[in-house]
Length: 85
Image (cartoon, rainbow, N blue to C red; front, side, top):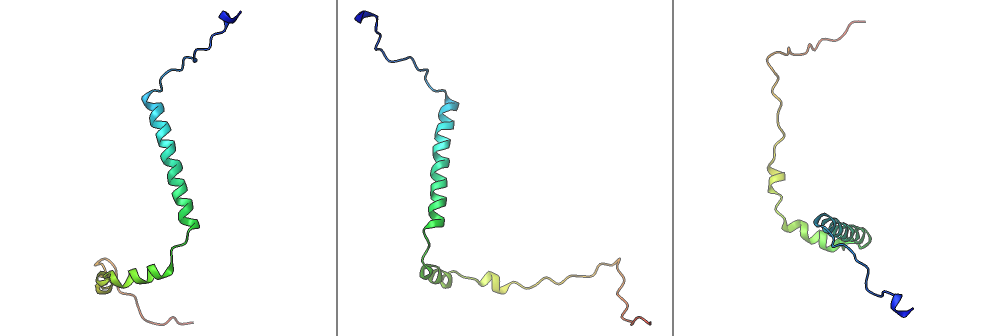
């Protein structure tokens, strides 16, 4: 009766490349989600943001000039006469 019992481990097939890729991809996705949730929960101190702004050069934004629109040749200028009632 003792010889009938088989205590050897069950045969499990080796995972394929796609199964490994899926497994590690799910792990990376879970880590990314945890980082995103922690970024929402943990606030960034305001003093760090205030100190970072003056050191960044903003000359590109200041020197930009608004673009002037050139009227096309096909359009006529609008009449400036008042409507009569």
